[in-house]
Length: 496
Ligand code: NAD
Image: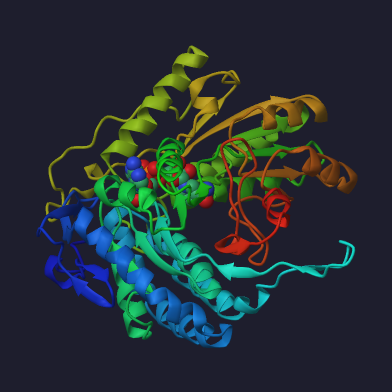
């Protein structure tokens, strides 16, 4: 299947102050398909000057945007929701081209349209508190829009994360500068065109394509950016946090990585648990922060679970992500491919043997296979890989791999299961499968995780509940953190 879009048909400019413009120095970078290795587009890269211009535009737009009432801001978000929904096919195509995401499982446009619709109504939730508990005083808190928000997103679900950043900021009355990932800038540029079509005032939303340096680091350290909302790796999160601290001590929201555990007790519905944990790992070819990449099964049911899991997990059709029959696309790029292979090698080493499926892939041919009928040799494909019995201390067990690689270990008791699940630096999503509801609630409370699914696993989340991690490394604060809180209350609210 050849590229469905001509390189020169795709929007490749920066969106600053309501206009699409080339970068100030004309510099571009090339985005390549991880399936065919063909150039998909040449995209303008934001310079320091462009980033500063975008922040200045957002700052200038802030007074008028924040002065609108929530109904008025919500009307723009509702229009955007409709436009995003209508652009499902184009957004799916752009993400398939940039990072190999199969169109067959693309839900992002509809999912994110619902987010815009939700936040179209949510502006009215911004309410403070009152207290008469100080003798002779009447106390109240106000929630006010914080100002210019900087947002930096990764490549794995750009359309969803664009909505997670932009929708709550706009609903709160903030203006925003978003930098997309250099690996997947095209769907964000399409979204910029939809923002334009929805009629948002110039400068309210600005969209930059570019790398961590210069545009990402400038946003993190910019004195006029009052809050930076970052999703990406732990390593980059540290840089963002440090830059924020060194500059204006802006507020920082970090959504980082994961190594999410799923606990399968012996009374669980094995069919359901195996189906859902496979789906969690298959999502985005394992390139999901919430993928249940560590599964702990009670010993008595481990053989049955493993057999059911393996049969489903290995039943994939790798191929062109644009082909509706493809269920697993290539990994996002050569860097991801090498990283996953590195961890597969470490997993093998830790076990002292090669487990079925855990075979290191050879680098794909760099020859473009399109048009020669040999598409099976093309693309950064990693087969679904299962490790069993890898020691808990092994690097492949502890680090985020971000690929279709799952570790399945066993436990004897509830206490052992909880201890193993919590023995991690990450705490984004955990799940527990059991028919015993007392145990389910007990274990859910004991799991150190931002979200716990009971008889369900990621990506299941409740759309109207906070989402994020719990640990020393992971902090996520939702809608309300786009506001200042006055008085001492804010410290306690931040700690919730
Ligand atoms: P990454 O950290 O390499 O890059 C993320 C973004 O940061 C990109 O836009 C990049 O250009 C930018 N960046 C790089 N260096 C920077 C710097 N010095 N200053 C500012 N910005 C900089 O991550 P990635 O490879 O794009 O994404 C994968 C990671 O994202 C995984 O760790 C995954 O778990 C995480 N992720 C987390 C969630 C969540 O909700 N917690 C969701 C999706 C992805």
